[in-house]
Image 1 (spheres, rainbow, N blue to C red):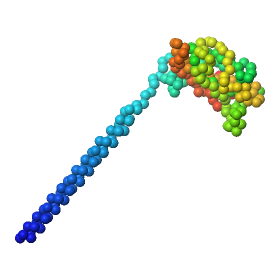
Image 2: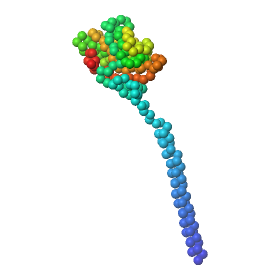
Image 3: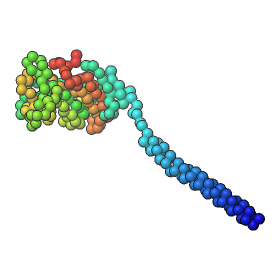
Image 4: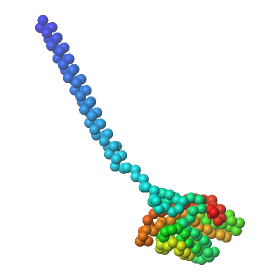
Length: 217
């Protein structure tokens, strides 16, 4: 009798212990998952909300036949033969390089400019430009000059100036060059003070790697 009671008591005690152990393990796992969830899930949500994607609205005053936000990353985009400035080589070259006649044909003063300069032989074939300091370097289809001081100050509407550009030296002109042409592929319009850039315009069509003499008509 005493033995049976002892056995029964031992069995009950073991079940009680097993039951407490299972309950504790289950509760611990659940708490651990809950704590992990609370610690991890809000983190990506906070990052996503902290870095929203903003898109600048298109400007209403972009030049004719162009559209865009007017920022340096998303300028007013022109296309085809549309130009804001006219560039003509004067047929003069000295130690400073080729001289260009540049005219502002846009409706606003211009501070910033990016010019692509092309070279052609007597037959009108486009010439490649080699780096005189590195003959082994891959030749380029044109030279690029750009900056907020490209014109040494603001170019007013219809203003014409004769300029040289520091990126086009006499030594840079390819052998056999008979004609030099430039395209102002990007400009920055001055604000009312004519000391800061209000917005930008660009026409990537003007800056093709392969360009026929005379450019787009």
